[in-house]
Image (cartoon, rainbow, N blue to C red; front, top):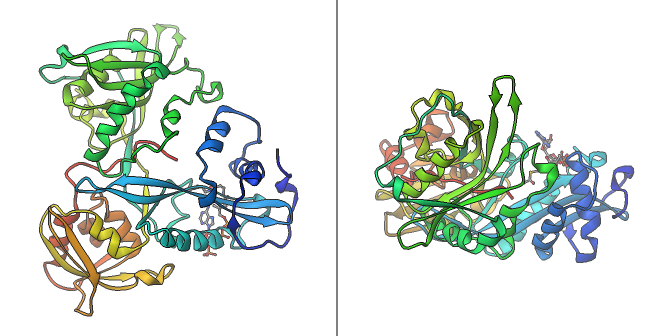
Length: 420
Ligand SMILES: CC(=O)SCCNC(=O)CCNC(=O)[C@H](O)C(C)(C)COP(=O)(O)OP(=O)(O)OC[C@H]1O[C@@H](n2cnc3c(N)ncnc32)[C@H](O)[C@@H]1OP(=O)(O)O
């Protein structure tokens, strides 16, 4: 374990690149900042191997680490299906002894300058608290559905062909390759999904006892169609409970991927129908996932919406060129960006479903917005019209808002499959 950073408070140096041999000290600071006590565990080991040290920074007070931040080198699907480099901002923390004196701000400054120098047009993150990152230009771009489904009352109607899907139990690690192939084939189809980097496949197998909340170890069911190829999988845990009326266990869904609608329906039906359970708890699901339209009583599923991925265009021109647009668009944006002033000013975006160009212009602006709203709308899940209704986007040329909003929106809701 590293130096006891929580006991130290004094002058700090600016953020600097992390060295491999500083990792323990750095990670201890992160664990404490989230209220934990540093100790060896499975998650620590995994994140040790996943940390991209040369893309991580720390702030130091003498020998003690008091600030941490990393940036995974992800590739993220954007509308149209391209995979775009995106810095996955992560492990952000400031020691409780050194908060509210600008350490986070100094790390965000350094990090966004770094991301720009690496030529990555997007930065993305999941926020511990939504109020933190707007000031740095991040907007909430994807949402997720969490649900607690009363499976004693809610029935699932499945499409024709579902009975033809075969399901079998498997040890999660033994079918990892087949599951990863399903995941990889799903990535281009949904904005917000992250292509797998080496090592990240292990995240889905992480199963420390402390994280099970009284439930079983991770279980896995794989689905296949006629040719025997795996077309989907569900990983879950079961929390048994023996109430006065008998068994009322809970199925805790960890993740589920499927390549076609009948595979997806078969997996969800399996979860609904497990004997000795009376509910399914599913977190972090896509907002447009089919099960919501197959249930007899959505109210008894208690769905609620949560913010998931926050996105910041680091290079506005490159970011807007990297995706395609559902309808033809030709608009001039007046972008406000106090934290990354290289983005501020007017940009003309011309594009359609085949491609786009976005360059600086001196033409009159059609729409005015901040980079944060551009980030929120970028993946097509938050309509520009909704942001305008909230007073966050101003229409300067009549018709420009409807034109841009129809172009930006995505038919498939953007979704982040896992946090990082
Ligand atoms: C992507 C991720 O990893 S998300 C994880 C973020 N980390 C955590 O939540 C761990 C616990 N919290 C912390 O470590 C720290 O409190 C941090 C990182 C959230 C903030 O660090 P600090 O160094 O205190 O932030 P800093 O002093 O630079 O504050 C910058 C501004 O953000 C505001 N701010 C900081 N934290 C918060 C917060 N939790 N909620 C709302 N506003 C906040 C400050 O008030 C300040 O506002 P101002 O510019 O108007 O004065």
